[in-house]
Length: 180
Image (cartoon, rainbow, N blue to C red; front, top):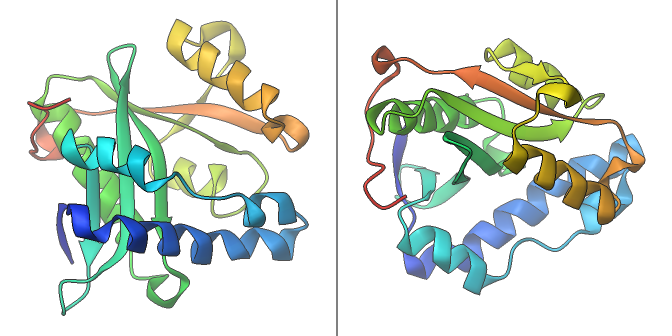
């Protein structure tokens, strides 16, 4: 598995990966999620320019999975992680999350955070297997509280959602947060 920063000429491909990955939501009665448009190229370009977009590439150096991150309240927040279905079950998502943990550790950030659907097997249950734990609403940081409020406003709370957190340690790896 090779992980590197996303390149500007790959941003439309990231949108294609997101669309393909989203199709699995159709099978669990969430067509609205499957039909949701990925971030526009201009928004992806911001992540790419700021060094907050990483890709897992195939043998031809073509992205098959990606992760976008923000810093929220002193933690590295996983905004999006998507794996193309043709590359599923190869631990690419896990690899990207471990890479993000290394970036957080190298940058002195104590944790990874994310928000996700509770009942979807490849969401909260998957993240729990990777060491994430739900953050009770009463313990949400201001940034996560604002993010959850925004998610509710755009209708994502039609399905149960949660914020999750995973501590990181310096032993988690290495990465570059200099542009975060």
